[in-house]
Image: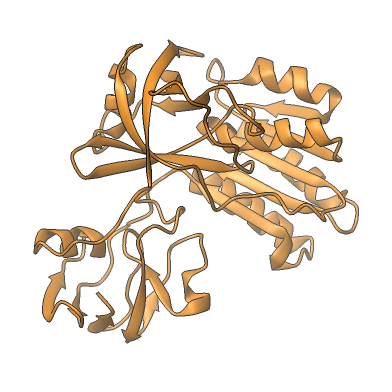
Length: 306
């Protein structure tokens, strides 16, 4: 099911960032959604990108996103930065792969740059319900979208830092002083989320209390392999610098996709046979599936139910 949206307002929270508020095109009310949700927007025919929702999630009047301009990206962010009030957009319903654990004793949130977008959604939720939480916002000088909103919502529960050394110290402080039963969430580039995860493991956190989402595509080169598509009766050779998703699309096989970053789970596909090098953050290995957009075959052949 899709939504027909209309661009209501467009603002620029800081250089290189664009915030867009969407209304439902027919005048209805947008659906409520859990914090950490995202929208999939069709930015070209058959091309969809996922963007985190930043606004109030309980009976919202508008659906809000903030997008950093990626000049060398595939084109989705450039499309968002060209949107103007009145433009019509096709969207998925809100989806979530980064929701808070409501039983947590304390919610610890680390945002890096544009990774603040789902963190802001979490903060709105925790502030509304009176949950215990703390936020660390790591950003470049002069590039901190939504900082004023975080300050208003968090008060002294917010810490900000701009340097790597300071970020490492604050991350260590956060994970080493957290009360038992806390949950840790990080969103941002892989270097930041990796540092948060490593610090938590060094402090003996259990894996089920560590949650992360990265906004940087992680389809790094790997060894070439052949994908055998059982339902389609086709095979395709996946090059060292090519994603499995792109290879499948190259031979005309329809496969769903959205974020292209191993985050949303839209392209998860059952594996029939073969080893997988998992690079996603939706834990596809738990149920024998592969994220086509970032993960790869770990051997010469991989058989898929596709």
